[in-house]
Amino acid sequence: MKRTVIRGFLSAWVLLTGIGFSQNASSVQTEPVFKVNVNLVVVDAQVLNKKTHQAVPSLQPEDFLLYENGVQQPISSLSQDRIPLSIVFLFDLTDSVRPVLESLSQGALQALQHLKPEDQAAVMVYSASVQLLQGFTTDHLLIAKAIRKAGKMESAEAAFFNEAIFQAATLAGKGPNDRRRVIVWLTDNVPNVPSEEIRSKYGRSISQYSLHNQTEALYRLLKTGTSVFTLLQRSSISESESMRNFSDPMQRLSRLQFPPGDVFNYTRQTGGQVLEIYGTRRVSAKMAELIDQIRTRYALGYHPVGDRENGKFRAIRLEISPDAQKREGKMIVETRKGYYR
Image (cartoon, rainbow, N blue to C red; front, side, top):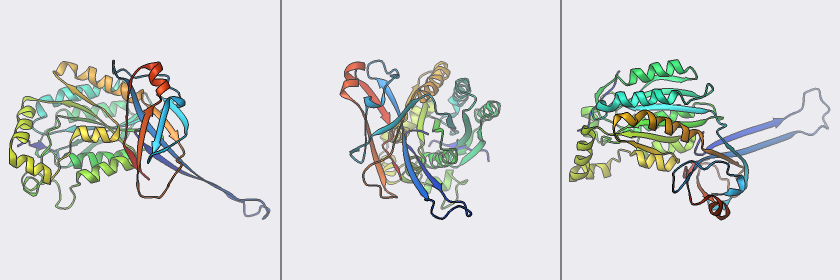
């Protein structure tokens, strides 16, 4: 059983801006009153060369084909490396991560060197429940202090991935809309099944009704326009736990009944990336690579055309035009699957 301890914008964010122009009370009554509602959707996307997996720079709006619910959308703006970052560093404190936790924290410290002064970050740790070590700040010294603290923590509780992601996405959503919202998840991708039995034994810090499920966590990610990027490093304990989870029939059945969450699913749905690390020496380099890839993503803005009924999921599909593929070679596009209006 994997156990843990606790001490205790943008793959597609939506900016809904209402701009109103009203009369002064003493103005002439015949003057017109203008009210304009502007709905701007900004889609965050990484474009990589399929052969080299390097970022493709200098693409233009006409190089993209963007669809919302199957309807092609005119792209009104395109930028790259201009949006400040809003990052939640999310540390897994469970037993299987503990042997590599310090190396992961060193990698996170390395990432700070790649942030710009205007970039903000927060630090959270989790096992069954979540603890905020440092709220959003642009003071990188405070962030570094929290990261060092996270690298020395441990927990005796289970690893409830869905709850961790839900809370991290909630925190990310409280940040300003003019930033690229990102969760940098440091874990081994070995969650515990959030069954009633596991909760009662290894999740005492979670109240009976407060645990969120996979569907709720994914909804919160898409609603807040938060992308998940994962730095995945396994220990020997992680390997043995992972093998047991997939070889034990009862474990497989339990995972179907109580989906525990998976970094690849969360990353794929939100248009992020998973970087797997083999050996502690490569952690810092991988983290630096991760931050650089986050920063070189494109932000495509559009004013949606088509059905605009509120409250429904809006599916997004982003492609590279045939002309651009011919000019630049085959490319891979990573972006979120959609958003909730």
